[in-house]
Image (tube, rainbow, N blue to C red; front, side):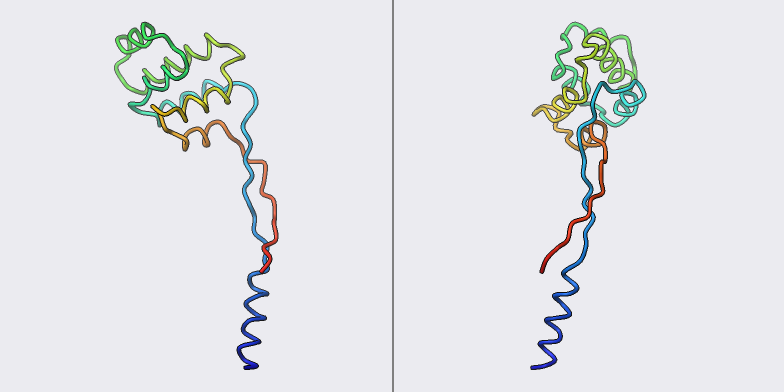
Length: 127
């Protein structure tokens, strides 16, 4: 019985420990050309769907398709067109919405490119 009680006390002390949580927040402002280029390298064939979700007209998408051979170039061209056309309204928030849109479904890329770490923060687990 004493052994069991000691085991419970030790287990409770082990559970009461500190855990670091990574806290993220959306970036402010507009994405840089370098970020858009990196994103273009990861997005792949979903570039047209993202372009549409960002409000790029179909006629522009067709021109981009014809003028660029590689998918990375097509994606980058469309993102630069979006950024230039929207100016200060081409925000991380809008890009995140496009990446998370039902026809794109790339939350992983939204988190990677539209958010930044502001942690870690420590939190105590209580057992």
